[in-house]
Image 1 (tube, helix red, strand yellow):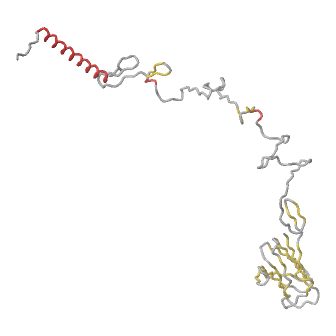
Image 2 (cartoon, one colour):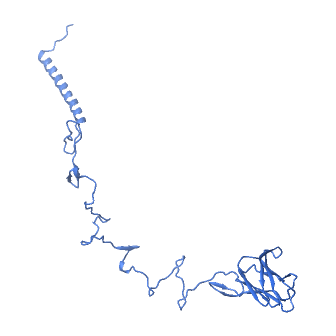
Image 3 (cartoon, one colour):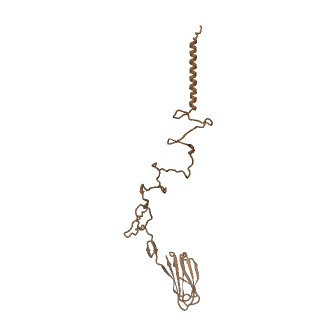
Length: 270
C-alpha cells in the first residue's frame, strides 16, 4: 500500500504556521521575563535605576511638594519650629516678648491667674477633714472638737492641751532630833514624779550630814548623793531629775545637839 503524498504548497503553509507559533511563544516568554525585571508605578513605566551601581532612584515628597534630600538635616538654634496643639492650631505667642500665652484650667473650668495670690488675714478658708466635711466653729470663731475618748488624767487642774498637776509634798523628817547615831527618814514614793526637790532644815545647834538614797522597789537601796553638809541653823535643798521608784534620807550629827531639830520634805512635780 503506497503512502499518500502532501502537496508542496500545503507543506509550506504548515511549516509557516509552526514557525509563527514558535515566534509568538518566544515573544510571550520574553515578555514575561521583561515584566519580572521591569517594575513600574501608576504611570506604567519602570522605576529609574542608576546604570552603574543599579541604585533605585526616587524623589522625596511631602504634602504634594517635592523635597530636596540635601535639605534634610538636624535642627539648629536658628531654626524656627511651630508647635501645634490638639486642635491642629499653632500655640499662641506674644508678638513683643515672645511669651507663650496659656489659659489655666482646673477640672475643666478656666482660672483667672490674677486670683492666685498669698492669703491675707481677711481671707476665709474652709478646712475639711478626711471625710470631706467642713470642721465646725462656734459663734465666736473657736474650733469645735468632739472628744471621743479621754484617758484618766492625774489629780490636779486638767486643761485640754496640757496637764498642770499640783505638786506632792512628802515629809521625810518631821522635827526629828538627829544625834551621832544615823537616822533614816520616811520613804517617799516618787514613781509618778519627774523632778523632785528635797528641802532640809537644820535648826539644831550642831552640823549634820545627809545622804540621799534611791530604790526601784522600796527594798533594795542605792546611794544617789552623799555627804550633803547642812550647818547648824541653816537650810539646804537639792533637785533630782533622774527616774527613781522610791527615795529616802539618812542623817547623822557631828555631835549631840542641845537644842533644835531637823525637818526634811520631798516635793514631787508631775
